[in-house]
Image 1 (cartoon, one colour):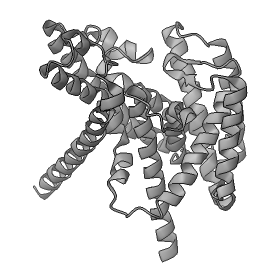
Image 2 (cartoon, one colour):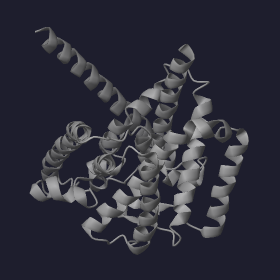
Image 3 (cartoon, one colour):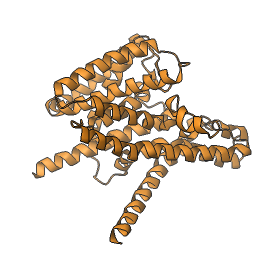
Image 4 (cartoon, rainbow, N blue to C red):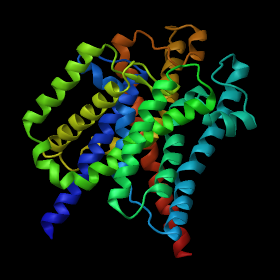
Amino acid sequence: MKKITDAICSRNKQWDLMRAIGIIFVVWGHNYQPPFLFFPAFYFHLSLFFFISGYFFKPQTTIKNKVKYFIKKTRNQLLPYYVLNLFFGLLTMVLRPMNINLGIDLNFQSMFIAPFGRGDQFVLYLAAWFLFNLYFISIFAALVYQKKIKVNIGIIVSALFMMIVFLNIGNNPNNSMWTIFLSRSIFGFCFFSLGYLFHLFEHRIQKFLVKPTSIIILYLIVDFLSANFGNISYSIMFGSVSNNYVIVPVITSICIILLVYIIAFYVTKILGRGSFIYKIGQYSYSIMVWHLAFFFLVNVIFFNLSLIPYSALSDVYFRYEVHKFWLIYQIPAIIIPVIMAMCFRSAKQKISIILHNH
């Protein structure tokens, strides 16, 4: 029993570390990519997060369970998205009289319709489009997945085919709102499903996958595709894939996800169980939501030091001499959202205990 418990704990820590790696790449993606990074990995953090979400998904096999799942996901994922959307909308309106323009007007359109498009109605909140799409992907998975594994595998194969066809058709940054939403959702559902599929067969393939030779093979595949097919990245933010051969970024995404899995497998054996990096993974969604706001606050400090012009505060992507000061942006954007989430969780638990006692 102890061995089983240890294995479960190790697996959870491993996947927390994978989340931490993914969110660090997200923040790097909006900040600056240091030259020492493995270049292709810079682009594949979103497929990693969809994959991880699918790994922990459990098919709901009864109508009753599907309804419970829908209510739980709506309460824990969709409602918080809209609450924070309102917060960032109000923040945008507060900043506008100061000639800081970071989004459109707060109204019904920006609150309830714009999230189905690019999701950048309030630019300090634009990274949260992932959470919005993930909600609908999770609900769709709960609806379509069945008790029989063979049926679910058939759904996954069909989804992969749809993704390749649809993204080839919709490869245009100027796509309509619904095309963007569908492109992201199909792309996300495929990697969500691959994560679910990986969980089903993990016990059979892990001992082969975690061999050092696997790292070399996976790296060589990515390097070969990069060298022979040019741009292997995707631009799913706009609902498109930037390579003419859509299967190429799909394959490289899968390879990099597996590389992250192997790296996390070994690193968790070295790191202590109380390492802060696990907290980064545990509260990665908080970082996803808040990191652009902390980039903005760093720019406010730089403005007050007379290092940047006031107009730069309206540019969410502006970074002052980022090749020198990228850590000044990176560190607070990662650490402070984690501390905020930990404090919120602690306060919520204390309130729950007080209410329970009364």
